[in-house]
Image (cartoon, rainbow, N blue to C red):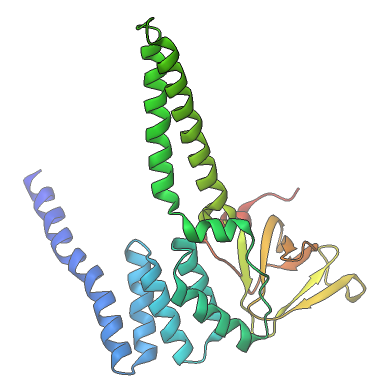
Length: 255
């Protein structure tokens, strides 16, 4: 038992510095112009540590230095998922889109709300307000003389708490954009009306860097929706989800 604990402690002692060092080494390589090497270290860091908007942004800058515009755009989009108000990432993404020939739609009300509100803080504040309101509602039944006051205050806090949580869920890009993906293939991709590569079923061509929403999967196809609302089928190859959890679509059974 003691040997097992010792091995575990030794492992933690060596592994934790390696996680921190991978980011430090990535930044050091980038500062010295060793961009290919820096990319490898950024990948190691993002695979082993909790993702951060700053790390994705710095990785995107390195990818741009190596003229990997689509990969850089993907990194910037992931940075904005974690921090919607991260202006440097938003500006860099616009530059990448321009170079890729992608016209990004104007941000909707969810994007604007997400830029102005910290979703995590809003949820915590909302939960606190809701349960405080619930407590006052319970207290109201114990104090008949001030029942009206406690009922009013409790109801107000509970409603405000629920509203805060709802606003957070609507504005949080990790929820609203959870099924988004990007076309990463250099040759772009093709949208079909049915899951078939029959040229007569072609709807449109998608450039590298185009974004879409994954609705479902069937075999080697994704049923997707474009930003303009148009729906169709696209081959999974060359399409990368913004949030890696969307990879679960690949294992879905055919409908």
